[in-house]
Length: 443
Image (cartoon, rainbow, N blue to C red; front, side, top):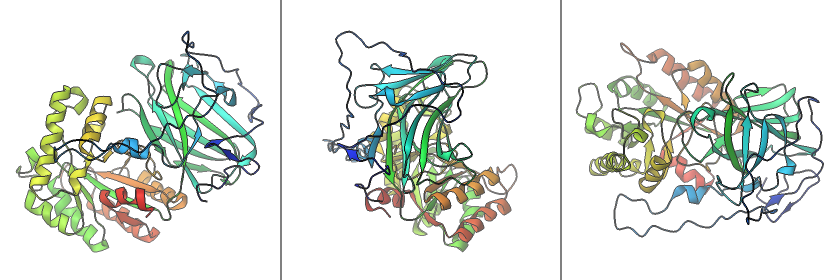
């Protein structure tokens, strides 16, 4: 499906916004509530009734600093595909649990976002939008801007559900946000197919949050987008901390299968006896690997002052450039699974892509600084996500630390089992550089 193809069987795209009627009712027939405003409209501010893309080409940075990248990748990629719903008109959405209202004070894009709230006895906020004529999402992926909130009401996971065409035939898409602060874009992929969903006939889109039992929730969502699927599925194999087991055990296995990898280097540990030194990292680079930044200190980056964060990020990138890893220096593996607004802003100043945590594959990237990764130590889940990537024509990024040996998180045999399955599924293994290139070339 190309960018001009309709997403609805009987509806048309007008001015970049999907116009679909007949949203009343509820498939489950219980628990409906009327949407109510959560944040009042400040006096004097006019609420927009149209979709506001506000997407322009990012300006090139006027910097002579060789470590600073030429543009902010978040601005470049956040408008990939088509804006499906900007949450400017919340009459399209209803709730199963919790409440939803327009928020003019916490906005990712346009005039307002949707504020989702739940009381302690509700466990989650849960909104839905129905499409009586059905949507064809068989060749599209979804992404969503989210703000997890703050304090005790902060949510830890977001879930999209596609009922295709009903609850017994649906796609589940969970995405954790435990290590994220502030607005981020999440690129969603399936974590479960229930029944036999027909994505050419999607009748309902649901957005849910999760915080835990007996806990109130308050968060925001904005900018639900669709992007065309990639021509082929792929896998990215990432390795944090340059532990020597990655060179000794994982590297030979990957060489046997012809797979490249992505190693996140901690420069100040590169001369330690249990770490991979610059010379061996260059051997891996020459075999097709990317050696990328992993600016890990004793604490997560957001725990440091902005000045200290920038020092760590710059020092790590400078080391990569000096040691011959200029291509990989464009990318970062976020240490200790944590990031925040200032960290992301600094990351986007020095890198084009950043990899975090997650539990699913994803399609084209609209959130380049928070690309999700599946934990490779959980072999069962990883093998299932490989199947999901194959079936959904997406990319799954896998995260590893130590492989084989005493105290390792995964045995050499378990690691090879995953590599063998990648080969059996016919999945292409790509590097961070390849993934970045795919955003403009379509693979």
